[in-house]
Image (cartoon, rainbow, N blue to C red; front, side):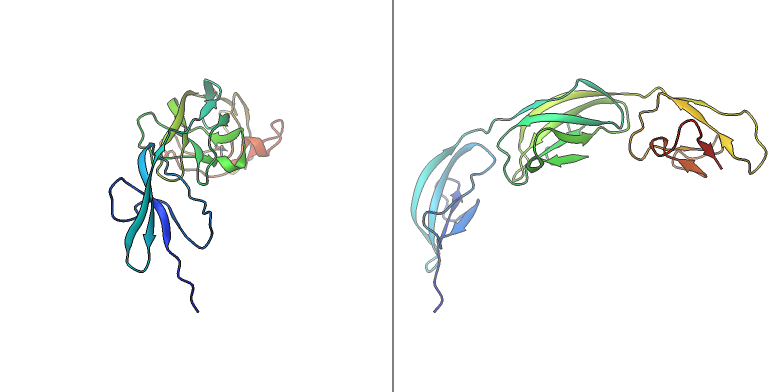
Amino acid sequence: ATVRTDTIGFTVPRSEGVSGNSVDTAQNPASLRAPDKPGVYEIVYLDSGTGRIVARVPIEVTPARATLEAVETITVGATVEVAWTGPNNPGDFITIVPPGAANSEHRDFSATDGGSPAKVRVPDRPGTYEIRYVTGQQNEILARRTVVALAARVELVAPDQAPAGASIPVKWSGAPNNPGDFITIVRPDAERSAHTAFFGPRDVDPENARLL
């Protein structure tokens, strides 16, 4: 025979239905995850046979606490280590976004279940950004910290002229050597994304690097 199970869950006060996290009554006691957003709620017992709430108890969900520690400045495109404390609930994550970005917006991110410090990559464009601890349920921001991404000062040394199809020696300095960075040769009016022959600075011997 099928065993009927009712529902226990969170809801807003005086509601006649479950509107938040819920579990069935197969286990007693049940483990119920609190909402991300602080406030006054009710835990209710919903009878699956009648669809009615037969018991309710008020509960106040208090704000969760989190902290973030990281460097104040870093080169564009680099990876910043973020030491954090927080609730580490399922789905919580550390991200880096422009100030004023929506709570749900994220660029590179690291789930908190990976431990502290988390590692997130700074955008390639110089400017001021915000590191955030964001909850996994409703994208509540529990902590934020400013980091400034500074432009890299890269210098390239190569011959002024070379025969068509020749291999060109290239030396450089000041490169951040971030993942995905590359050195290429293109026409002066080429699009930013254009490339012909190329190599990643972190993938070659800098004393013998050449563009073919």
